[in-house]
Amino acid sequence: MAEAKKPGAEQPQQPAGIQVISQYTKDLSFENPNAPESLIGGWGQPETTVQVSLRHQKVKDDTFECTLNLRVEAKKKDSDKIAFIADLAYAALVILRNIPKENLQPVLMVEVPKLLFPFAREVIAGAVSKGGYPPLYLTPINFEAFYVAEMQRLKQEQEEQGKSTAKKK
Image (cartoon, rainbow, N blue to C red; front, side):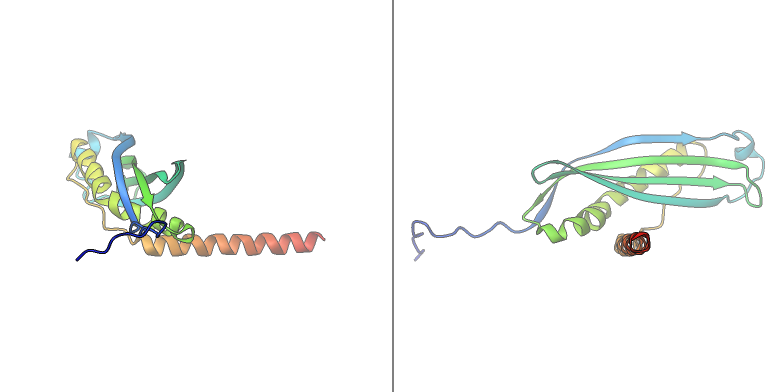
Protein backbone atom coordinates (compact mmCIF):
# COMPACT_ATOMS: atom_id res chain seq x y z
CA MET A 1 0.00 0.00 0.00
CA ALA A 2 1.41 3.39 -0.99
CA GLU A 3 2.12 5.84 1.77
CA ALA A 4 0.26 9.12 1.70
CA LYS A 5 2.53 12.17 1.52
CA LYS A 6 2.48 14.22 4.65
CA PRO A 7 1.83 17.93 4.22
CA GLY A 8 5.08 19.88 4.46
CA ALA A 9 7.24 16.82 3.78
CA GLU A 10 10.22 17.45 1.53
CA GLN A 11 9.98 16.18 -2.00
CA PRO A 12 12.95 14.13 -3.16
CA GLN A 13 15.44 16.18 -5.16
CA GLN A 14 15.66 15.45 -8.88
CA PRO A 15 18.89 13.69 -9.88
CA ALA A 16 21.76 15.74 -11.27
CA GLY A 17 21.97 15.81 -15.05
CA ILE A 18 22.90 17.51 -18.27
CA GLN A 19 20.16 18.31 -20.76
CA VAL A 20 21.36 19.30 -24.22
CA ILE A 21 18.88 21.77 -25.68
CA SER A 22 20.71 22.37 -28.94
CA GLN A 23 24.04 21.70 -30.66
CA TYR A 24 25.30 23.90 -33.46
CA THR A 25 28.20 25.04 -35.57
CA LYS A 26 28.95 28.54 -34.33
CA ASP A 27 31.79 29.21 -36.75
CA LEU A 28 33.48 27.11 -39.43
CA SER A 29 36.35 28.12 -41.65
CA PHE A 30 38.35 26.02 -44.12
CA GLU A 31 41.35 27.46 -45.91
CA ASN A 32 43.03 25.64 -48.77
CA PRO A 33 45.71 28.22 -49.72
CA ASN A 34 48.00 26.04 -51.83
CA ALA A 35 45.39 24.13 -53.82
CA PRO A 36 45.63 22.68 -56.39
CA GLU A 37 49.39 22.21 -55.83
CA SER A 38 48.81 20.62 -52.41
CA LEU A 39 46.29 18.20 -53.92
CA ILE A 40 48.25 17.02 -56.96
CA GLY A 41 51.88 17.89 -56.18
CA GLY A 42 52.87 14.70 -54.39
CA TRP A 43 52.97 16.36 -50.98
CA GLY A 44 52.30 13.12 -49.16
CA GLN A 45 50.84 12.93 -45.66
CA PRO A 46 50.92 16.43 -44.13
CA GLU A 47 52.15 17.22 -40.61
CA THR A 48 49.08 18.11 -38.64
CA THR A 49 48.76 20.16 -35.45
CA VAL A 50 45.55 20.50 -33.47
CA GLN A 51 44.77 23.28 -31.01
CA VAL A 52 41.88 22.88 -28.59
CA SER A 53 40.21 25.48 -26.41
CA LEU A 54 36.99 25.59 -24.45
CA ARG A 55 34.65 28.43 -23.57
CA HIS A 56 31.48 28.53 -21.55
CA GLN A 57 29.13 31.24 -20.45
CA LYS A 58 26.03 31.35 -18.35
CA VAL A 59 22.98 32.24 -20.42
CA LYS A 60 20.43 32.21 -17.59
CA ASP A 61 19.72 30.31 -14.38
CA ASP A 62 21.07 26.78 -15.01
CA THR A 63 21.49 27.27 -18.78
CA PHE A 64 24.96 27.53 -20.28
CA GLU A 65 26.50 27.81 -23.72
CA CYS A 66 29.60 25.64 -24.05
CA THR A 67 31.90 25.98 -27.06
CA LEU A 68 34.57 23.55 -28.21
CA ASN A 69 37.09 25.32 -30.46
CA LEU A 70 39.27 23.20 -32.74
CA ARG A 71 41.96 24.54 -35.07
CA VAL A 72 43.64 22.01 -37.34
CA GLU A 73 46.62 23.08 -39.40
CA ALA A 74 48.24 20.74 -41.93
CA LYS A 75 51.58 21.55 -43.53
CA LYS A 76 53.78 19.89 -46.10
CA LYS A 77 56.47 17.87 -44.32
CA ASP A 78 59.80 19.69 -44.01
CA SER A 79 58.21 22.91 -45.27
CA ASP A 80 56.18 25.87 -44.09
CA LYS A 81 53.71 25.43 -46.95
CA ILE A 82 50.20 25.04 -45.63
CA ALA A 83 48.01 22.31 -47.06
CA PHE A 84 44.89 23.40 -45.15
CA ILE A 85 43.60 25.08 -42.02
CA ALA A 86 40.26 24.10 -40.49
CA ASP A 87 38.80 26.24 -37.70
CA LEU A 88 35.65 25.14 -35.91
CA ALA A 89 33.67 26.54 -33.00
CA TYR A 90 31.09 23.89 -32.15
CA ALA A 91 28.68 24.74 -29.34
CA ALA A 92 25.82 23.45 -27.27
CA LEU A 93 23.18 25.06 -25.17
CA VAL A 94 22.81 22.94 -22.03
CA ILE A 95 20.80 22.95 -18.85
CA LEU A 96 22.67 21.67 -15.80
CA ARG A 97 20.15 20.39 -13.29
CA ASN A 98 21.04 20.00 -9.62
CA ILE A 99 24.79 20.18 -10.18
CA PRO A 100 26.56 21.34 -7.01
CA LYS A 101 28.34 24.66 -7.49
CA GLU A 102 31.77 23.09 -6.88
CA ASN A 103 31.13 20.64 -9.74
CA LEU A 104 30.03 23.19 -12.37
CA GLN A 105 33.53 23.79 -13.76
CA PRO A 106 34.38 20.09 -14.23
CA VAL A 107 31.00 19.45 -15.86
CA LEU A 108 31.37 22.43 -18.21
CA MET A 109 35.01 21.67 -19.05
CA VAL A 110 34.94 17.87 -19.14
CA GLU A 111 31.50 16.31 -19.47
CA VAL A 112 29.92 18.73 -21.96
CA PRO A 113 32.99 18.74 -24.29
CA LYS A 114 32.94 14.92 -24.19
CA LEU A 115 29.39 15.09 -25.53
CA LEU A 116 30.33 17.63 -28.23
CA PHE A 117 33.57 16.09 -29.47
CA PRO A 118 32.18 13.29 -31.70
CA PHE A 119 30.00 15.80 -33.56
CA ALA A 120 32.80 18.36 -33.90
CA ARG A 121 35.12 15.59 -35.11
CA GLU A 122 32.62 14.73 -37.84
CA VAL A 123 32.31 18.38 -38.92
CA ILE A 124 36.12 18.64 -39.24
CA ALA A 125 36.30 15.36 -41.19
CA GLY A 126 33.62 16.58 -43.58
CA ALA A 127 35.26 19.98 -44.13
CA VAL A 128 38.65 18.39 -44.81
CA SER A 129 37.06 15.90 -47.20
CA LYS A 130 35.18 18.64 -49.05
CA GLY A 131 38.50 20.48 -49.32
CA GLY A 132 39.83 17.63 -51.47
CA TYR A 133 41.74 15.67 -48.82
CA PRO A 134 40.99 12.33 -47.20
CA PRO A 135 38.72 12.82 -44.16
CA LEU A 136 40.69 13.67 -41.02
CA TYR A 137 39.31 11.90 -37.97
CA LEU A 138 40.79 13.55 -34.90
CA THR A 139 42.06 11.36 -32.10
CA PRO A 140 39.76 11.46 -29.07
CA ILE A 141 40.73 14.10 -26.53
CA ASN A 142 41.20 13.39 -22.83
CA PHE A 143 39.21 16.32 -21.45
CA GLU A 144 39.92 15.23 -17.87
CA ALA A 145 43.67 15.73 -18.44
CA PHE A 146 42.93 18.98 -20.26
CA TYR A 147 40.95 20.21 -17.22
CA VAL A 148 43.63 19.16 -14.71
CA ALA A 149 46.35 20.91 -16.75
CA GLU A 150 44.24 24.09 -16.95
CA MET A 151 43.60 24.06 -13.18
CA GLN A 152 47.35 23.57 -12.51
CA ARG A 153 48.17 26.43 -14.89
CA LEU A 154 45.69 28.74 -13.12
CA LYS A 155 47.04 27.73 -9.70
CA GLN A 156 50.61 28.43 -10.80
CA GLU A 157 49.52 31.77 -12.27
CA GLN A 158 47.87 32.74 -8.98
CA GLU A 159 50.98 31.72 -7.00
CA GLU A 160 53.20 33.82 -9.27
CA GLN A 161 50.85 36.80 -8.92
CA GLY A 162 50.95 36.36 -5.13
CA LYS A 163 54.77 36.35 -5.15
CA SER A 164 54.97 39.47 -7.33
CA THR A 165 52.45 41.26 -5.09
CA ALA A 166 54.44 40.30 -1.97
CA LYS A 167 57.68 41.66 -3.53
CA LYS A 168 56.03 45.04 -4.24
CA LYS A 169 55.10 45.56 -0.56
